[in-house]
Every structure is written in structure tokens, then in C-alpha cells.
Length: 235
Ligand code: GDP
Image (cartoon, rainbow, N blue to C red):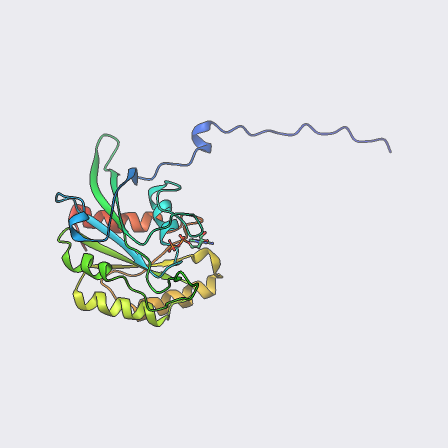
């Protein structure tokens, strides 16, 4: 039997519009570093609303901030030189598309609080109970703080240091959103089990949000939560 003539491959061409990712109706259009502070007199002036991010060192906070803002290198990821122990303020503009003709824009500060729970001393020893006093000062003093996102490593939902941080924050009465990080590192069953544990251990008004900075999963949910704070439409 002779060789069959090769069939011509059918090529499906997509227009660039279909290939490019669709812009989300709610997203950050500007993010820039403003200031670092360890004392109140170093906080930026004005009455811009603040949304803060806090978590144990290495929880994935910098990666989450970069993912949320779609801005690689905005916050320094572990292992990068110059990672500081200061409170860092970023100037953010987020955009909400209402319909084809209308949009709303919000200016706010994203406040990156130093990671707690782990710090290498100059001698290489680690001090596992470190919580910089200026983290507490900031949370107690800032009148512009409207929401604090407490990050919990999705793989480690029961760390005593996170529970201590949560209990303190609850007592102080700051509005909280729990975010479970690095969820791409778990299987589906592990993920649902740990999310249940997190919801039980860290009860807040809204359910925890599962986030993967690697895959940008959870970004829309977190943006929606932040938007309810910015618009004053808190559920
Ligand atoms: P931070 O100390 O809380 O700011 O944590 P980093 O953002 O610096 O992240 C610590 C480490 O976890 C880094 O090696 C990141 O690449 C990694 N990481 C952070 N977020 C994720 C994530 O969502 N998925 C995965 N697979 N790795 C992550």
C-alpha cells in the first residue's frame, strides 16, 4: 500500500483580542512606593484610606502584594537584597468598571507591615517571637486604617504565633480579612480541609479568601473585598 498523502493541518487563527487576557472589571491601575516608617511621624500625611497587610515572615505577603497590584518587584520577595523591617506605604489607584460608559477610581494606601515571628540576628540565631513594637503602634494609632488583611499560610493553619496575632487584632477591634496564601502548593482535599480549619480558628465577618500569588488565584475576590471597604458598601 502506498503512503497516504499528508492531510493539511487546519490552523485556527484567533484574533489578538481573544488571546490577550480579559481585563478584570475591578483592578489596580497604579501602584507606587511612597514611604517607609518605623515611627508615627514618618507616616505619610493626609487622610487617604489605608488597607494593611500583615503575616508571619515568609507567608507570601510580598508576592501577594505584587500579584494584587500586578506589579512585579513592588514589594521585595524573600531572598531579594534590601528586604526591610519597616512599614512600607504604597500609593494605589484602583478602578472599578460600572458599565461600558462609567467607571469609578479610588486612591488609597496599601500598607505593608513587617513580617512577624522570625528574624535572624546578626549572629545567625533566630528569635521566633519577634513582633516589632511599631506594628502594634501603627495598628493602634492609624485612624485611616480601614481593613487589615491577615495572611495565614494555607499549609500551616494552626501556628501559635498566628493565633496570638489574630487574638490580639480581634481584641483591638480592627476590621479583619483573613487570606490563606500559597494555595497552589496543596492538593484540592488539603486545601478544603485547611480552609475549613482557618475559617474555624480565625472567625471574622467575612469568610477567608484563598490566594495563590503564583497563579493570581483569589485576586478578584480580594479586590472585591477591598472595594467594599473603599466604597463604604461593607457587607
Ligand atoms: P513574605 O516574607 O511574607 O513577604 O513572603 P514572600 O512573598 O517573600 O514569599 C516567600 C517565599 O514563598 C518565596 O520563595 C515565594 O516565591 C514563595 N511564594 C509566595 N507566594 C507563593 C504562592 O502563592 N505560591 C507559591 N508556590 N510560592 C509562593
